[in-house]
Length: 301
Image (cartoon, rainbow, N blue to C red; front, side, top):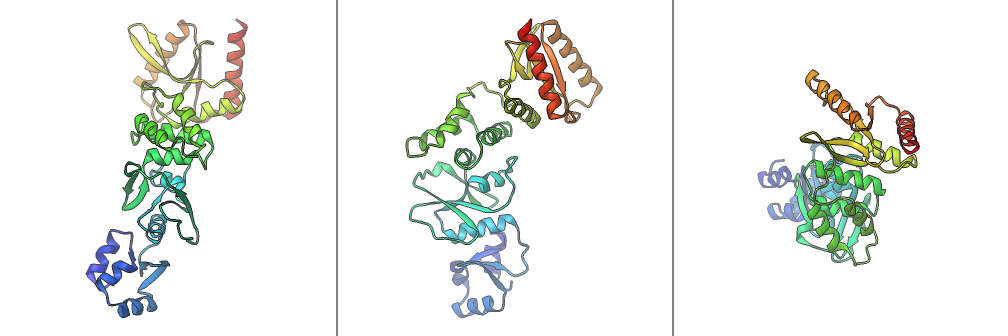
């Protein structure tokens, strides 16, 4: 790129420039020559990629936003991918457009919304995007409830969203013809101010596995008093006194940690708990069978 002013735009935009940006620094005739010579490669109408710039998913997403105009933001699954939430790969381009009816852009999914709030928007790596809270609320329209619930807990663990901000956004979307907000309301009803989202994704996976097997949903990060201290059980059926612990080598690889975990398990057993330990190598059916058996024995006693 021989024009440094145009290169400046491209550096901050993943190698992209818009037609209006190019015409700010180039004569119209020069722009046409550069496009014809493939020095500027058309991506969408009015959006060009600097020749030789590597093509990436983030570049394609920003190109779609630039083509759709200033009222368009990456959203839904694309926003989740930008925030690197588990289960939402960087594939495809999904936007939300506010205001006038959006144009059709090939290969891009565009949602329309009349609910515009400046607090619902941010930028990630130079890409306009809905905030984590707004993105999670939007996801309830396109993803399964348990997938959104998992994403909510991951975002809470990573401290990129708060329950307060989620409730605020969900309330602002409520009553505007958006039935999908009922899913987020249900998710939030199970998460009070003291809610702990847990420490690992495997805990979530085991909980979902048990629910899919028609077993009761276990309490997560259940608190129990042991002497003069309080501990948290990964997953628990408090009434039946069945405790479920996920043992990760990554988090329990030291001898001191190993010994502490065994001592804690012994204390839970003394309190009358049946303690089940699972690892990343535990098979799904083995987990279900062990938990079902423990619950059956508890109800029979």
